[in-house]
Length: 154
Image (cartoon, rainbow, N blue to C red; front, top):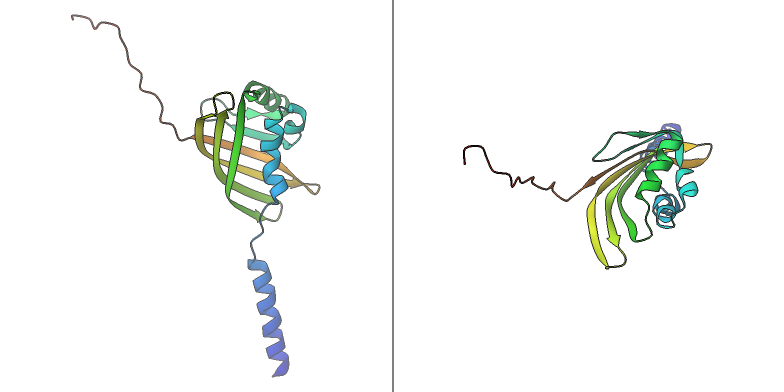
């Protein structure tokens, strides 16, 4: 009877250990924001896996190291600051998900110019967390297109 109780106790410990949710270290979560704001294209691009993709809101999928470097080069600007707040991270083996909110701030004016939400998918490659997929969505509604041309017959 004592053996059954011991086995049940060990099984409970194993199940409790498996149910424990891991989170990404703060240094990983902050790495993209830090290298982006430092305008360090090489360091920022090094955070991505070789088969990474960026899924921008208005544009085609950006793939591959050269494409990602060009995308980052086009986005980086010393006048703007990119800030993220992770609301949730979840790690399962070699894949992690980070979900949060972002803002883009014009540092000259001291004003936010864009707010939105993001999702980062990370992969653990040889002991290092690398970005595998990124998607951002702005909270700003698309502008309404207005035409000032005269209608026919008016």
